Length: 298
Image (cartoon, rainbow, N blue to C red; front, top):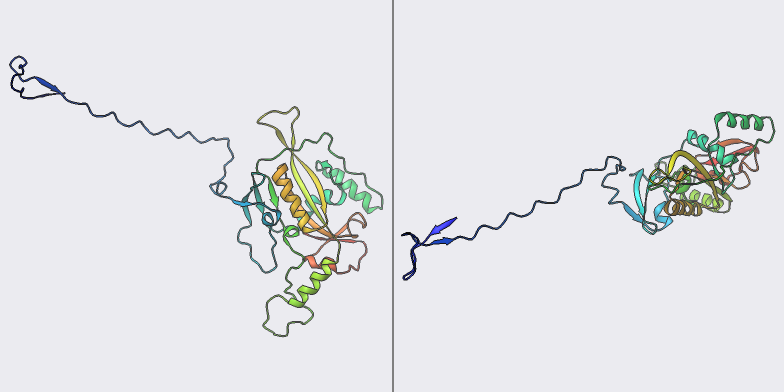
């Protein structure tokens, strides 16, 4: 645009009109904001809590103890193991008899440091038939050329066997230590007695690890084919079992599919295959009247 202005004295006029004066144009508009890329339809769908997950740095923080009488607010959460820079999905729900039966095959017959695929039901029925007749069943077929995959976000099931301490509170006092009729808290004397007895009792903790078998040959981006494989680990204490879960999930990217505890000398290696569930860990310190029973806490 041009703006007409009166010429100064001595300046020429433009065809009888004042000399046009140039006007500075306005600045260009700012550039548009950067475009937000569309979401990846094939990426794992995790909510914002994953990015704000709790960070842990030790097995004690990873799998915390849970005493009787304490309520569980969050039974599932995503935590980040800071030293290994890996997110892990932890569940704390209770184990049931069906869960034990699902993994009994490897707890009862599996060897440590060996990867297995779950046998077919016909093979398991054959093993049960041989056991009931007093015959030694065939060993589980180990997986040849095992290629365990490191999962991006492994799952760790921290059930009662991994969270119950040996000094757990005892509320059911059958010895009459609490004289008050309306007393509903934990019995300190029963708690101390059972804790000392359990501390002197050898325990065996079973941890079942799981992951997928990598395909052969290796294909980048599709490195597993969905075949679940399992591995058994035995530990002598809850702390050792929690450390194994911490390391296996953080470093190796393997899941913890199941865990349980038995009394040393009364496992499936020393006794027949009749299993009996105990509701509390301290019950493993009591003597079992039946010599052919394997007591299991889970």
